[in-house]
Picture (cartoon, rainbow, N blue to C red):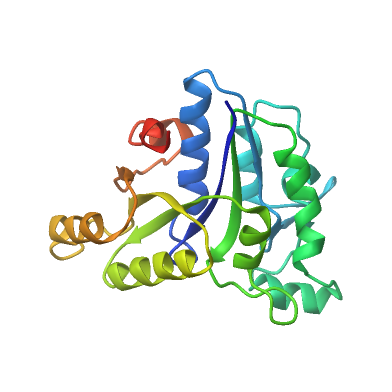
Length: 226
């Protein structure tokens, strides 16, 4: 039975891709076919094959179905800035419609487990007044929220969960990615998140020196999504 999710974060640099790759690896380890998409990525490197984004490459490496780079990341920009600003500088119209079709094509592969990863947080702007959240709404996918655990994360997490609910999408689960292990009252913060977020915690990922997909997968529980 196929399952697909949109994965977002409480902010940028909270480990969305690290967790997404871990979830995909866990699905692979369980014998499930996997696919992924990152509709837009900024901060790409120029290579002989074109622009390449490290996050998109990490997702592609965990896909078992035959996808090429452009399938996973159809829109790529070199500057490491907000996608709508990078698009404006490149003269590209970054609309929901332009990102929707390639992600629908990834979903149409009907992998057992598919993740579509947004950029930054829930309300990252696209063109005009559209946001990345509008793409998630157009795809009609349940959402997995990566909470970057550090000072201030409770408010960020609860506000994001409220916005997801207001947009009419279910929060399927959340992951505590412990960015700052020295966070004061860490256990109490995690307990508050568990009490207040209306979805199961899929795992607590500690700060890992080499946070590869296999290492991260060890801390995640895919079965809580079923």
